Image (cartoon, rainbow, N blue to C red):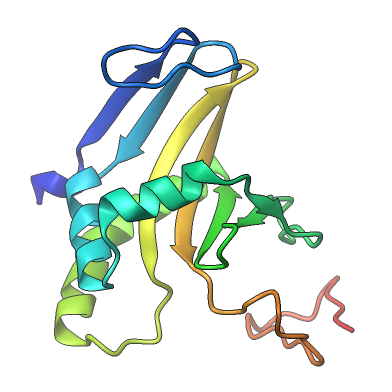
Length: 161
């Protein structure tokens, strides 16, 4: 249970360090939530943690034109394998609370249709904390979406083409 509560922090100075590469941005802290648990999930889903991180950092992310209804930003990795979504602080906290049950469900239902979460982190940019969740991308950009459905139940202020 303690693996679900761990938060690892790493500082990225612009000049680099023995753990980080030099970069052109200002210095920033980076937090990873439940890294051991998410590493387990990645292995369970067949993702090598080092390969996954490299694929996210080696090429620019592609911003998807339609952001989430909550104002979140959506990105896809250059090879279409990952979706990167900004989430509100409360959503990040909620995901953290779900992790123990998510772990149990994955072990009991390996073929589940639940989203595949690969990581939850927070980066500080411009004095703001930005929470990010990394998930499996189910819809490749090559596939044209002809019909959209909203299965959340409410039709209030919702439209789809």
